[in-house]
Image (cartoon, rainbow, N blue to C red; front, side, top):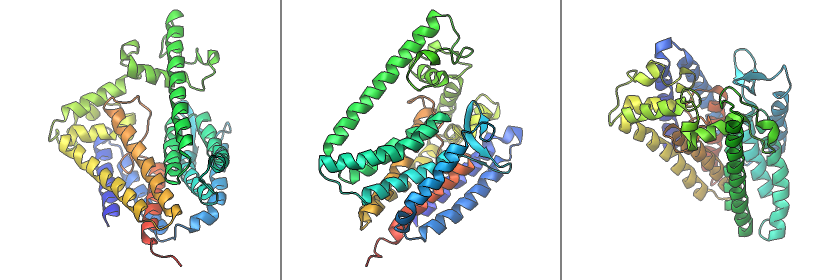
Length: 387
C-alpha cells in the first residue's frame, strides 16, 4: 500500500499547487488535472491487475502502434505546433503527446529484447546492442525531430539501467562512458563556437536564433544552445529572456524559508514573475517551495523517495529477469525526471522542461506515469505466481 499512497499524496500536492499557481488568472487546469489523475488511477489499477509477463507477448505490437503517432505528429498540418515544437496531436478536448507512449514502448521493447537474447560474452552483448540501437534509436530520432529534447534525454538512462541489471559485458559500459564524455565534449565545443559566432556577427541571442544552425553539424537548435549558455554564462543572455524563468525560480525557492509563505500566498507565481505559462507545469516545485518552504519541499521529496525505494525493493523481490528489468527501468526513468526537474528549478542544471511526475500539469504525462507505476505494482503482485 505504500506505493499507491505515496502516488496519491503526490497527485494531491499537484492539484493544490496547480490551483495556487493559476489563482491570480482564475485558471481551471487543476480541475482538468484532477480528471487526468482519476483516469490515471483507473489505468494504474487495471495494469497492476494484469500479469506483467503478458506485456512480453505484445511488446512488439505495442512498440509498432506507439511509433505511428510519432511519425504522424511530424506531418505538417496534422501535428499541433506550440512554442516552435511539433509534439502534439490535438483532438480538441485533449492534446496527445506521442513521446509519452513512446517511453512505455521503449521500456517494453528493451525488456523483450533482453529477455529473448543470450547475454554474457562480448559477442552476445554486441548482438543485443545492435537490436537495441535500432529499436531505441528510431523513436529517439523521431522525438528529436519534433524537437523534444526533454523526452529524448530520459530514455538513455532508463535503457542503460536495464542493460546493467541484465549483466551486459562490463566493456560495454566502459565504452558507453567514453561515448558519453565524447558527446558532452562535442556539445561544449559546439556551444563555444555558437557563442563566438553570435558575438563576432553582433547577433542577438534572443532575436537572431537560427543563424548558427546552418553552420553546425550538431543536431541542436539555437534556443537549446541558449539554454546551455544561460546556465554556464548567464551574463551573456538577457535575463528577461531565457534566463528569466530560472532566476525567478531561484527567488521562489529561496524566499520560502522553512515554513513558506502559505498556500496561495506566494508572490512569484501570483504576481507573474514566475511566468504563468510554466509555473503550473515545469516549475511547479518552485511554487511548492515558496508557499510551503523547506518542510513542504522535504515532504514532496520524501514521497518521491518512497516511490523510488519501493521500485528498487520490488526489483529485488522479482522472481525473474523480466520483473527486475521492468522495475529498474521505470524507477530510473522516474529518478531522472525528479532529479532533473528539481535541479533545474534550483539552478543546478540547464532548463530542459522536464516535468515532475504526478505533480506537473499534463494529461499524457500523468497517464503514462500511472501506466508505468502500474507495471511496477504488477511485478510485485505476481512475484510469486510462477509455475
